[in-house]
Structure formats: structure tokens, C-alpha cells
Image (tube, rainbow, N blue to C red; front, top):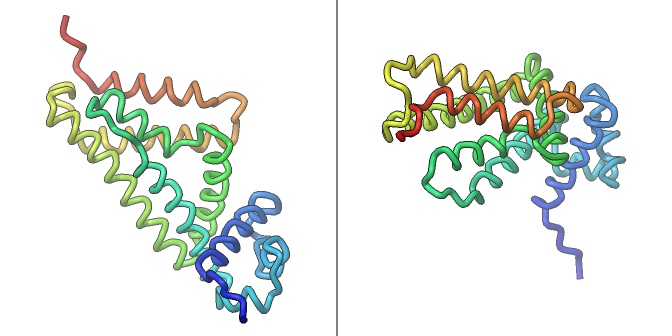
Length: 200
């Protein structure tokens, strides 16, 4: 009997091989040949799953964001925004080795997207989706009366988003300084700065 191949699983295997190549050698070395070798496949087999390098990298980029989305979907939210918002943010910032690896690969893709229209399109989609996260956070704080009065909501959305982006970048560049604990404390401090003081 012919061997049944799960094509989607093979594509995921290739994407993960691409991540490893990017982390070890940089995106410039993420050639079809190098990725095929890392994945334990022939170049011909690689062409069966991805017709171009751009298609392969676009798929690998989307797999990074899908993993983040899957983690967020598994969060057991309590309904307490002061507890739930940090849980949500924790899945976006590189607070452990797995997330740090993903973030390193993501930043490599972001740089490449400046010259690759296919990657640029997905980068913009992710940017829009992340901005929606901060829009929903501010909407939630406002709707529950937790937000300080007279906040410039549009500005606060961008400020919160910029804080998280900055923490992520610094954590990748200087992990010995910007630790998971420091990021969590920064998120907590910023969140508290948006909220009314607790009564009593």
C-alpha cells in the first residue's frame, strides 16, 4: 500500500525547520536548500509543498501568529479585567523560551516584509489584529467604569501597544535585563496607571 502523507503536517514540519534555520543562520540563509536539509527532505519534496521561497516564508510567518492565537484561545478568563488583561498580554510578549524563539523569528519576518509584498500583507493583518486587542482592552476598562475619566482613548490604545512592542523588542535584544518578571511588572504598572484607584 502507498504511504499516506499528511500534507498539512509536512508543511508544518517545513515551517518549523524554517524557524530553526532563521534562528541559527538568519533569514538571508533561509533558502529552500537549507530548510529542506533542516527538515530532512529533498529539495524536490520541498517544491511539492511550497512552489516558491516566498510562499514557504509566508506560511511559516502565519504559523507563528497561529500559535499565539491558539494559546490565547486556551486562556480561562475569569471576568476580572485586572487579572485577565495581564494573562492576555503574557501570551504576546516573550516571557519564556518558546515565546522568545517565536518572537525572534517574527522580527526576522518583519524586517523581510519591508521588501516582500506577501510578507508585508500578513504583517499588516497581524498589526491590525494586535491593535484590536488594545482597542478591546480600553473598551473593556471604559465600559466597566474602571478607566480614569477624560482619557484620550485613541492615544492610550497606541501607548499600550507601543509599550508591549517595546518590551518585546528589548526582551529579545537584552533578555538579561528585560526579564519576564520585569515585563509583567511593567504591564501591571501601566494597567494601573489607566485605572481609577480602588475604592476604600
